[in-house]
Length: 185
Image: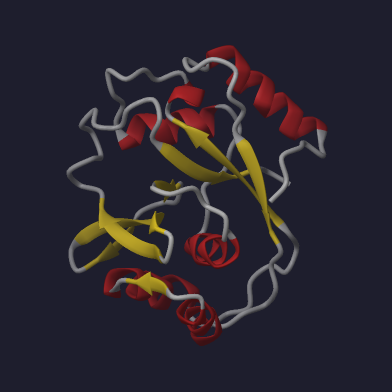
């Protein structure tokens, strides 16, 4: 994990966040995924070796979207931000509002493999904590799903897919709800 900007573009995005945040001076953190070419089986094996629970729907997202292709091996920088960082209050915000605002300030959607690699590499996640992956939903079993990484107890980490329909337009996310998005290259 790193917590510093390396480009003028990243600095510009953080300045936009500073202007709209509703939660004071807390800074979003930046996490660099040290990517390597990895197959579906390799990432699932690595997660299993670390004791990470991956639900069936998350595995289906991986199968549907990755197809065992080798992805970009350049480091990927994710920013973990809260709804409050995007200007939303505890009155609540919807998933659509959060995603639209993130794209508006210059962030990019993650690809599903980002969620798998993030869960694999982010070992010091606070307890309890959950971070939604800011990705375009993937249809699995007639439900639109996104990934979420959680750390619930000292020894229980998860990577799960969640049906977004109940959250898409309802204002259920408070200012502390966290999401990971890609920083543009």
